[in-house]
Length: 92
Image (spheres, rainbow, N blue to C red):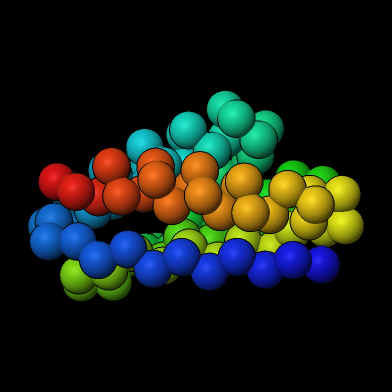
């Protein structure tokens, strides 16, 4: 199993940070066929072989992704793509 941890700093209001997180989730859901749900300030997502969360903090968004065996082979590509996406969306 491969683990990906991404921390993105931001200076968004809580409302704007949640909107940014929702945008990241929608893009990931479309690309990786993930089911997403909010639990407070934590957005969880999963599908067969992938699970994780996006946690919002005051000036930080923290993404944790667990990849199963098949997706683990693509962990570098997935991490790069998600990191770029988060940088764009949380830039404000």
